[in-house]
Amino acid sequence: MNVFRRSWLPLVALALVSLLPGAAQAQPLGHYLILTGNTTSGGAGHGYVAIPHSPDLNPTGAITLEMWVRLNTPFTGQSCRSLIGKGFTQTYWVGVCGSTLRSYIKGSGSVRDGGTIAANTWTHIAVTSDGTTRRHFINGAQVLSSAELAGPIPTNTQPVRIGSDVSWLFSPQGSLDEVRLWNVARTGAEIQSLMFQQIVSPLPGLVTVWALNGNGQDRFAAHDGTLGGTTAFGTPSVPAGPWLSSPDMPDFRFKVRLTTAGVSREGVQESDCIFQTVCASGAIPGRPEVLLRVIGPRSNGYLWPIVIRFTNAQVETWVEQISTGQTKYYLLDFIGPDSNELTGINDRFGFLP
Image 1 (cartoon, helix red, strand yellow):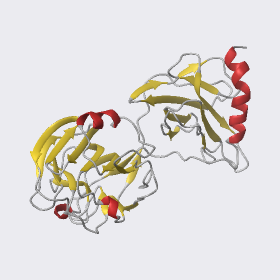
Image 2: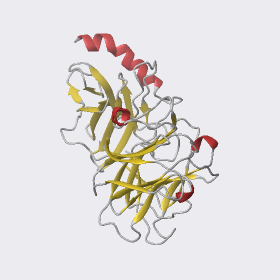
Image 3: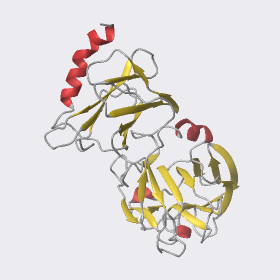
Image 4: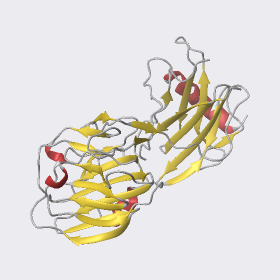
């Protein structure tokens, strides 16, 4: 028996017990918002997340709006689509016209075009204003710098909409993820430093983050949104590479991806593991960071996937039930190096026998 099995077995057993009934339950969340788009104002296919008005959603001095987008092609119907807005030309709005990134920050007359969003490709976009200069960024690279209109950013009491705007009811055809609003103008270096990371704790100048992980909630629960119209959620494609499996769980196989500071690693299976468990290492070979199990059927009649982690990295897990071909996706956010809690997943309604 190696060092891992001697020193970690009690911890593993404790973790497994803590994830049984009564512990917090995580759901297999989608990873991004999917919108089908609409060809007439507010017509069929129109979809969005609506966030009620709040004064801090109206920055007046400086602002940064950023998100990941993947736009489908061909672009059909109305050429300009709302990505996020709070009254279109009344205050701030970011959208795409054809494939061009367009923004309003100071209401009517403040329109700026700059930057091309490639079709069918995940692209990070950001729009900033420090009160005197407007900047657009594509994948962290500045593509527009333009003098800003004088005066503060206008305010209103309209709701914020993601994927639409109350005054421009046209949704994009494609997907949106990790939408952020700041009350400061982020620099290119600052945007690049966090564009590949999920933000899970407050930062100076950060107003809110809408992760779009299966719902419209604000990650900090201050500005939760509700879904409207036609919306759906997707999950990341199963990554390449071998599946992880155990002869003790013959009907299931797993894949794991661990991400820290924008660097992703495929989980590597460790051969020396406990019964009915798959152990996967990441940054350090031979040191398991994620433990995977499917137990049951339990009292509710379901087989329960369980993910236990011993890492603060973001953990993505795909669990496939081989007999049915059904695959579940689970996401555990990056929790930061100072956290004392290593959260896990216990999906009580995972699979039927």
